[in-house]
Amino acid sequence: MPDNPSGIYLHIHGGGWVFGAADQQDPMLERVATNTGLAVVSVDYRLAPEHPYPAGPDDCESAALWLVENARAKFGTEILTIGGETAGGHLAAVTLLRMRDRHACTGFKGANLVFGAFDLGMTPSARQFGNEQRPLRTLDIEKFRGAFVPSGTDVRGPDLSPLYADLAGLPPALFTIGTRDGLLDDTLFMYARWIAAGNGAELAVYPGGAHGFAHFSGALAAQAYARMDQFLSTCQQGHG
Image (tube, rainbow, N blue to C red):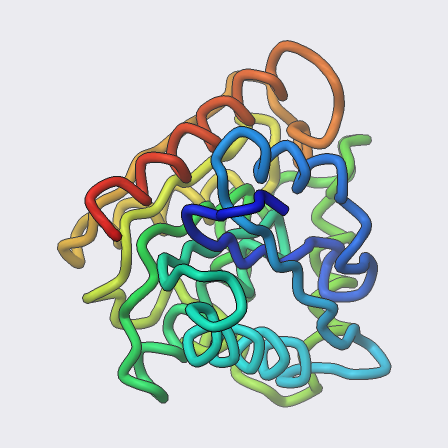
């Protein structure tokens, strides 16, 4: 962590709400801290199927609320940003909505939403992706959703599918996606609704990028990470 962080990045890891841990991406988060001057807080939320919805979102909400109440005392700054990859992108969006609706908190300065799932009812690209041997097939999306969402739950309720929520009053967001990702439409649709709700947003679409491409070494990942770091740095400007 930087000695005198300029802000805080609340990071939520991916893994289909089923896998992963807060420390699984330490090198990536160390890069964020080094390049942006942000302190990074990563949430070790409870995982499905042992802890299905709403356990994971509840934990992320609790972490965000703790930061809002304690950031100044613990880190010396109240500038907050949030983000995550795949399921983490979904949970980051849900957390922003919960903070706004349940706690009247709209203080986050930016959202870094990376190949997130925003419609658990499945967008056209998710339904049509099929069994192509990429990291996330249509069947995988269905299985992850089945583990996370209890039977009989409305998967398109806004607390599960933020695409259907009122998105007004949310911070600027950077949406990152590859064209060979089954969740392509989730990002395209969410970006459009984010803009239509009056929020700032940037869209970064990477030709040929599969789901999770930014986690693998290569020019495409380096390009994506550079833009994310720039976005997170820009979110801090003008706030003190």
